[in-house]
Image 1 (tube, rainbow, N blue to C red):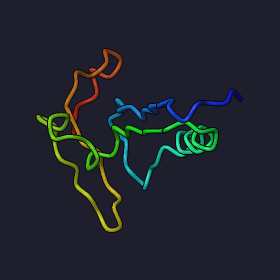
Image 2 (image 1 turned 135 degrees about the vertical axis):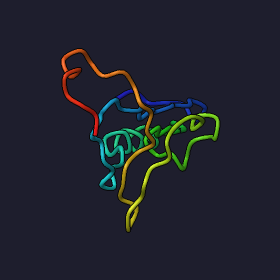
Image 3 (image 1 turned 180 degrees about the horizontal axis):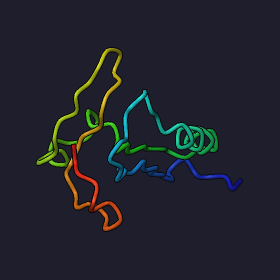
Length: 95
Protein backbone atom coordinates (compact mmCIF):
# COMPACT_ATOMS: atom_id res chain seq x y z
CA UNK A 1 0.00 0.00 0.00
CA UNK A 2 1.39 3.44 -0.85
CA UNK A 3 2.42 5.72 1.97
CA UNK A 4 0.60 9.02 2.40
CA UNK A 5 1.98 12.33 3.52
CA UNK A 6 0.37 13.69 6.72
CA UNK A 7 -1.17 16.47 4.60
CA UNK A 8 -3.18 14.05 2.42
CA UNK A 9 -6.94 14.24 3.12
CA UNK A 10 -9.14 11.26 2.26
CA UNK A 11 -12.96 11.40 2.19
CA UNK A 12 -14.82 8.07 2.48
CA UNK A 13 -18.55 8.16 1.65
CA UNK A 14 -21.28 5.74 2.70
CA UNK A 15 -24.08 6.71 0.25
CA UNK A 16 -27.88 6.63 0.55
CA UNK A 17 -29.69 3.48 -0.51
CA UNK A 18 -32.79 3.13 -2.68
CA UNK A 19 -34.57 0.30 -0.93
CA UNK A 20 -38.18 0.06 0.16
CA UNK A 21 -37.43 -2.25 3.09
CA UNK A 22 -34.09 -1.02 4.49
CA UNK A 23 -34.06 -1.19 8.27
CA UNK A 24 -31.29 -0.08 10.61
CA UNK A 25 -30.18 -2.93 12.83
CA UNK A 26 -27.22 -0.83 14.04
CA UNK A 27 -25.77 -0.77 10.52
CA UNK A 28 -22.38 0.87 10.37
CA UNK A 29 -20.08 1.14 7.33
CA UNK A 30 -17.65 -1.43 8.73
CA UNK A 31 -15.68 -1.81 5.49
CA UNK A 32 -15.14 1.95 5.25
CA UNK A 33 -14.10 2.06 8.89
CA UNK A 34 -11.49 -0.65 8.24
CA UNK A 35 -10.18 1.12 5.14
CA UNK A 36 -10.13 4.42 7.03
CA UNK A 37 -8.12 2.92 9.88
CA UNK A 38 -5.55 1.53 7.45
CA UNK A 39 -5.25 4.87 5.64
CA UNK A 40 -4.94 6.69 8.96
CA UNK A 41 -2.19 4.31 10.09
CA UNK A 42 -0.32 5.27 6.90
CA UNK A 43 -0.48 8.95 7.83
CA UNK A 44 -3.55 10.20 5.95
CA UNK A 45 -6.24 12.41 7.50
CA UNK A 46 -9.47 10.44 7.04
CA UNK A 47 -13.02 11.81 7.02
CA UNK A 48 -16.14 9.64 6.73
CA UNK A 49 -19.45 10.98 5.44
CA UNK A 50 -22.21 8.51 6.33
CA UNK A 51 -25.44 9.45 4.55
CA UNK A 52 -27.33 6.65 6.34
CA UNK A 53 -26.68 8.32 9.70
CA UNK A 54 -29.23 11.14 9.58
CA UNK A 55 -28.16 12.58 12.93
CA UNK A 56 -24.71 13.35 11.51
CA UNK A 57 -25.94 15.18 8.40
CA UNK A 58 -26.51 18.92 8.03
CA UNK A 59 -30.16 19.97 8.20
CA UNK A 60 -30.25 20.99 4.50
CA UNK A 61 -29.81 17.32 3.45
CA UNK A 62 -32.82 16.27 5.53
CA UNK A 63 -35.31 18.81 4.15
CA UNK A 64 -38.38 17.11 2.67
CA UNK A 65 -37.47 13.69 4.06
CA UNK A 66 -39.74 11.76 6.38
CA UNK A 67 -38.08 11.40 9.81
CA UNK A 68 -37.50 7.79 10.87
CA UNK A 69 -39.29 6.00 13.66
CA UNK A 70 -36.62 4.75 16.07
CA UNK A 71 -36.99 1.87 18.50
CA UNK A 72 -35.12 0.97 21.65
CA UNK A 73 -31.34 1.03 21.45
CA UNK A 74 -31.29 3.01 18.18
CA UNK A 75 -32.86 0.48 15.81
CA UNK A 76 -35.40 1.65 13.27
CA UNK A 77 -36.02 2.96 9.80
CA UNK A 78 -33.83 5.37 7.88
CA UNK A 79 -34.91 8.78 6.65
CA UNK A 80 -37.43 8.23 3.85
CA UNK A 81 -38.38 9.80 0.58
CA UNK A 82 -41.15 8.42 -1.63
CA UNK A 83 -39.78 7.68 -5.10
CA UNK A 84 -41.39 6.33 -8.26
CA UNK A 85 -41.76 2.56 -8.25
CA UNK A 86 -39.80 0.60 -10.87
CA UNK A 87 -41.96 -0.64 -13.75
CA UNK A 88 -41.56 -4.26 -12.63
CA UNK A 89 -43.27 -3.40 -9.33
CA UNK A 90 -46.09 -1.18 -10.64
CA UNK A 91 -48.77 -3.86 -10.09
CA UNK A 92 -47.92 -4.25 -6.40
CA UNK A 93 -49.79 -1.75 -4.19
CA UNK A 94 -47.97 0.34 -1.57
CA UNK A 95 -48.98 -0.40 2.00
